[in-house]
Amino acid sequence: MLGRRLISTISHQPYPFSRIEEYAENGEALEVQLDGLDRARIDEVKTGVLNRFSAFIPFEKGKASCSLGEGDTPLLEADPSLKKDAGIENLWIKDETRNPTGSFKDRGSLLCLWMAEEMGESVLATVSTGNMGHSTAAYAARSGKRAIVFVPEFAPMEKIMPMAFYGGRVYRVQAHSYAEMKDRALKTASQCGIRLVTGNGPIRCEGYKFLSFELYEQFQGQIPDYIALPVSACGHVRGIFKGFRELMEAGFISRLPKMVVVQAAQNAPIVQAIQSESGEILPFPVRPTVAEAITSTNPPGGSEIVEKTKTYHWLAETATEAEIIDAHRKLARGGFFVEPSSATVLPALRKLSANGQIPRDARVVIVLTGSGMKDLSLLSQSARDIHTIGLEELEKVLTKNE
Ligand SMILES: *Cc1c(COP(=O)(O)O)cnc(C)c1O
Image (cartoon, rainbow, N blue to C red; front, side, top):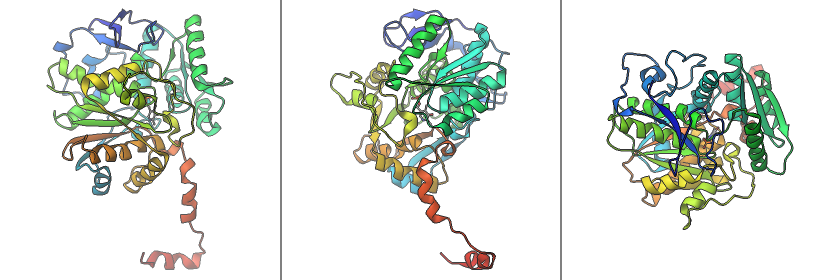
């Protein structure tokens, strides 16, 4: 296997690969650095992206067990109405809702599980309000490990009950804020020598980068111009970009796509920092949004994203509540039932294409990050469109012309 270590993402300080904490002492995010990627090859005859791109995995080959069938998700051309709505003709959809627990988090959970295996750890611990805990609990169950999930007290029971149903230990933690709770949980776990993973950890990102390898294959070696996705803890966006950086290092591609960082206007600390003079991330006030899955008010390690936006000319945009609700429905009417958080990308692209930041003919991919099945809160109006009928009315409704 290639030499490997962790490095901090801004000042490039090295850390041992086995480091339990997910951040450097100065708060910077960490990423995995692999030696010898310039010689990495794709094993084209194998099935499954993890097998074809195994040279890019920072773990011993052959350990690759406990998959639940994550990844290898479809890339679909958007229909004309979505293209029109986004103002982009060459629009593609990467459907991550097809992952085993309904979100891209599964790609990262598998790699975190391999990390735990290699380090001889029997617990998978995380802090989550939803998808991350769900995914962690599933992979713990799959591998016979114990899941410990800390959730904020405000997390809705419907979202957290499945974690317990998988057999995970779920604790609702009373605290003044989610940020405070996350901070304390990370510190306490570090003192106890327990690896507690968050959405922006270096090993999760190793799983997320496989989406880029899939896009590379699905576009037959061509690289999209832009990839738009909802951003919260920041692990997903940097993981996907890292995949393209590694493909370039290995000599497979000669340019990088630009990422489009999208947040709900109600909770946009990263977009605000990108658009500000200083580039500094200011903690956002806690405000409700229908895009509940993307509500990190002060994401640890987020400065990396602000820096990368400058260096690589990424774009950033927000979506209002009304825009998210509208896009959520439009995506459903286009055949895609997503979480409200995933719907933020559509209005964001519309604004960026309208003001010329994205050219009309650019090849753009939107990542649908999570399935709508877990968050039905916006669907109650649909009850109006459901009618109760008697048996004698079956023919009438079948032949009704509207
Ligand atoms: C976690 C999550 C996000 C945000 O990803 P980060 O890696 O936290 O930036 C977006 N959408 C959904 C559905 C998620 O579960």
